[in-house]
Image 1 (cartoon, rainbow, N blue to C red):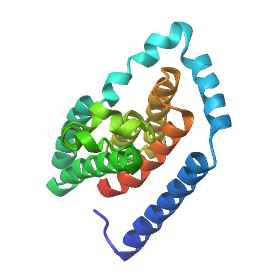
Image 2 (image 1 turned 180 degrees about the horizontal axis):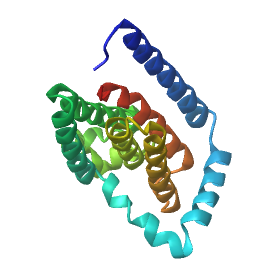
Image 3 (image 1 turned 30 degrees about the horizontal axis):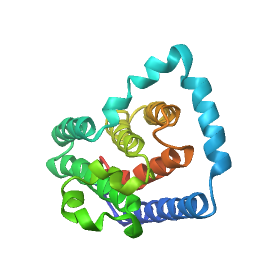
Length: 205
């Protein structure tokens, strides 16, 4: 974990910066509109992941689903706990849990809640597609978070390469989500920022 007050201040500053960045991005794209970004990102995703490469990008989609990503998180937390300590391993699961809660809250709109079926919604919010909002992309956020934690844990001596690999995985799933029509460009970018914020809960030191 963080070793001194300087590390604590760095953690706090990083968290505040990412939170501000996420708030600004959400405000701009969701309140002022993101049509140009979404159109260009969809065209780019179609060019990159369409045709012969479609199956390559479709391959990663199941790993971002809630069940698969939860299994990956448990496996990662177990390895991190053995390599570091128990609390750091638990922090990985906490980070994924916080991310899931944030994702759900961002998708819920009070005016769209199924008040007549509230019990069903609480039991199975994903059955309602979290009240018909795709922001942010859960697939992208979960894989970005886990890839980032894995890079910080296993690539300490080659951190740059590890982080580039994490970025690559994030782009891989992000392009797939846009190309499949499941999310917009704003959804996957917002998810990446959300994952960065939640990764601070699971520092591997």
